[in-house]
Image (tube, rainbow, N blue to C red):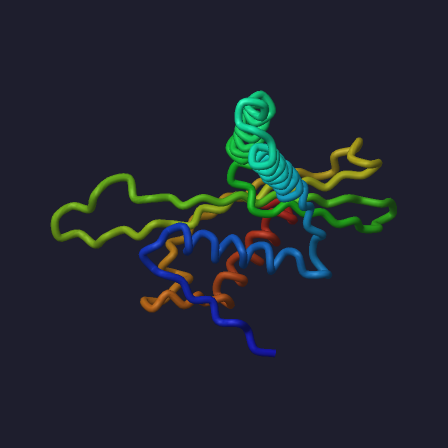
Length: 200
């Protein structure tokens, strides 16, 4: 089976990070690995849809009813829209943060054990401009994996570990912006193995 070629603009850090984040989700949500938890996406979708429905209902009401008569309800709709949109932004900033993937799986090893993995990522930029004549340091993809294994519905902690790793985007993308998916997946699989085995 041939892979779909992933090509991005090398100069766009958002595209580079999003391509790596998507590769993380694609690899870890395979049936034999982890089941992805979509709570963050569900919360943002619910807030987004609620704000759009309120905006639509408010616009329709303002269009159907005379201006002076519709002002109180239109103001209420606008205020609700701003509140819901702000809640979505605050949720992304304070709760979801840089989380890319949350997954869990259950295993049977003398008892039912639950494994949970949380992966977050960010782009690390060079701390300062390179010295004259020195090589330019590329931006880096920084990833943190947090792993917890427990039993008794999370009451008994069996193992907990965290692994951090940083690699330059240039190690996963060529000059044309094509992603080396095999290299990325090998690197990520090594990190997952490390965090599951408790190597910090």
